[in-house]
Image 1 (cartoon, rainbow, N blue to C red):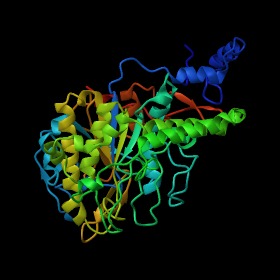
Image 2 (cartoon, helix red, strand yellow):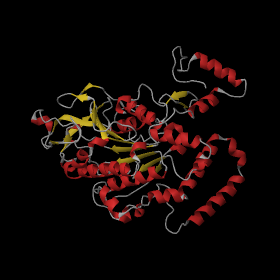
Image 3 (tube, rainbow, N blue to C red):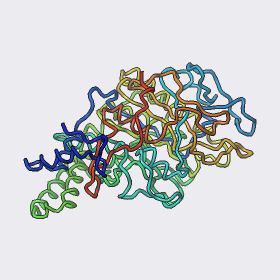
Image 4 (cartoon, rainbow, N blue to C red):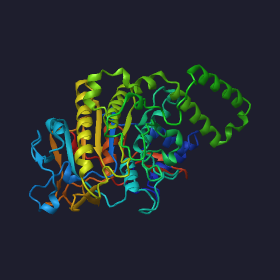
Length: 479
């Protein structure tokens, strides 16, 4: 097997000279360097720890001092109004507003030392979901672009589609619920970067559902929701009233007839990609497996109550159903759709009254439910925001952006539960030991899935580039 993973004496693009010569020689026998790289991309290490990942993303930046890294000995202006409570994990100072998680802390590890220098919501959202810095100046934009780095889930989708029959699978490998990040935010309803496939190609974008809010001031993530709001239709593929499955299939047949008349254009790469994208979209919108996984009416009322009838809790339940059905990577967003939420600059009232209680309920139910179904050992659960908050608080206990230190929760797939990783300083401002960068978190997630972090994919310029650069899996997190 050709190794393309950064040996010493590498060429300027990172590929060893010996490998280049071997690849060039192989080209004489009908296989080019891109072909070898494509073949290498399918190779995976033996025995992955996780069959699937559930990535819970708390957008806006939850405060470390109000969640998993309380500092009761710090000065009053820093420690905040919340108090730590006892947990089943020695040394874990968990918020009094996370009692359900405290009661099952033996099932998860708290990484206290996530850190990066990108103190900007959009850039950090991209960074945490891809493991790569967003190459847009801080404050320079919000919407995703075709030049963005592919999300971790998009790489998983890419690998799945390369397998035989991958384009015809009736379930995606990558899904996002309940909405694309930023879709419900009131400030222009812009999207945020990070969850998309970027330059890898839009056919590797996630299957994304779309759940609306009542008005600009509404936040369904934490309020009780009616079943009529929780249908989780596929974004962009909703059939609409009166468009039955048989009509959808007839329309597809008609499109196939048109396609047959223009097969001469098949050599144009963009046309081919669009055709593949359309076939993939059709497979998903007509999929009984997809519809069943998104249908919460199939769940017992008791289970739904356990998760909470708010949008975050029900989205966590949908994530469990998708993973159980065979989806490999599910991102669950807890967005700041009212323009505030976790981005608690002014005060912590919403954090105390709404966000922490619903997060506590939804995540604890997800971990308990996965464990009861025997799925936790093969499902990696990751929960975090894109940054933390400043130690110095406002008079009403709001806090500013602070990316130098923030926590993450990891569980399942061999993660050592009941542990705390890394040490923060006395004010929860800086890392003392064991810093974990977004690159290292991404490498850890890929490692758990059995995907080599040094796997290379071909970028738009035809260059083989590693999916993670500068990060190593944090193996100490695993038992």
